[in-house]
Length: 122
Length: 197
Image (tube, rainbow over all chains, first blue to last red; front, side, top):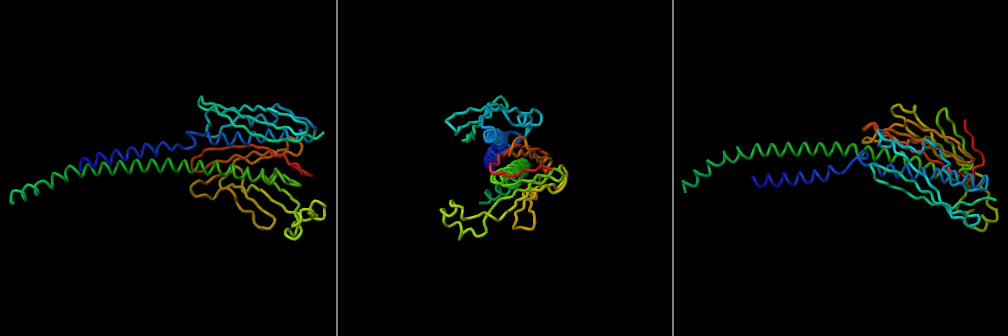
């Protein structure tokens, strides 16, 4: 009986340790930040597409809204800043563009890369 | 024989005296840990629902906007109305790709899709409704989730460049109070008219 109690308590505490580590988003918002970053990269690519179609040029600087570079998703106390950089591999009319979005959360750097081929109208 | 009976009979009370408090303690511990796990699970589920609903609305919007022929955006009651050109008889006319390429098939039918914010932004039960032309009702695509009830706190759009629709969507969970805000932009290559009121 005594041994049973000890063993059951140990099993319960191990199970509790495992289950309590399943953190809510507020503890680990990396997935939400990644999703926000993908939408931000899409914004940059859309603006580049528009410029390429209307004015026939590719602009590598950030074209989106400045307020979209800061997010408070699941991190109200310390907003997270995104850095957007664009690389362009030109080949005639078709530009293969890569947008890289970087951010730092709890001293851990993370990034996503989104690629799209943009046709420049001449 | 008698001796054995006597000993076992005396031991029953001592056994219960030790085991019962331990059993109660174990039960209490299990209940506490269980409650904590379910509490955390509730928060986690509400956060997942919140994130998923924002992402779902935005990905639908991107998909719909990309192919739109016209777009009317109203800011008073946040509404986005997309129009597409389609054909009436898909199977008989579109069966031959060559006839489509030759221009024999004319996309003369229009189809609309509509996003509307139902309720006031930031108020309880504000949600985004979605409507297709063949439906009379706009169905909610956010909210109405028992474990992760949400409200829309911001649904705004803008035209930052030619043929570009910029959307900002912020939602708040009723369960946890957490907010999530995402912005994106879509370039609409085939858009012929884009009006913002």
